[in-house]
Picture (cartoon, rainbow, N blue to C red):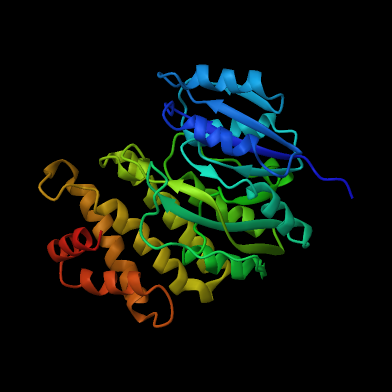
Length: 320
């Protein structure tokens, strides 16, 4: 059986410092039947010239550009121009192992509709942050519901990278444009289309944590997109998988807490946003506390939040 073409979609915005390491990891994949689609999202640094140089060096690379429209818009352009039967995503400031595509494709070959693998959090120098994730060749086949539960407990998380999808799934599912947290907005819709999902116990995606990451930027009202997207997810789970109520509570408690903690405690500019997020934290924390079997970190955080905002904020800073 001939190998299927896999499209790797990479959005790029002002990543001149990181993009070479990312693309180098892609052109050296052991699975060779790939195309690499690089989308310059209106960069103002040297990213575009670097992308063009890469396109000249490897015929599998195609470069597209747009005025700055955000991650979702850039990925949609990549999907529009993708020729592969399967799609995987890599962010332009991250990098992957040389077996990243091969392992994802092996998962598909097992009869899965979607394949997933593990990621390791690293700093800009490639040094592991936090716990080192273990790796093995084990592959698990999950149902759609089991997959949904796994991503709600963030193992793996709701990011589209580190996964492989049939391109046809995106004929109906598009990334929201101009919003943060676009992965959470569509991941459950993609899983809904699948009957089997493979999850390989292999660390092949390296998620680079640096000071310019969206997650580390100071709070802005745009980050309140998490509320609309999170509540849509909650409604979906309550309708489709009501017995996963505790799992979705865990995911949303973590998401809302993460955004709330980015609001400066001494800033009166975001009083409304502060109250909205704190109300949602209180809404979901009861289910998190009651969950005795999974995600001990979230359960401890939820319990600490009962002691009030100030202590919750201090405890988070100490833990991180």
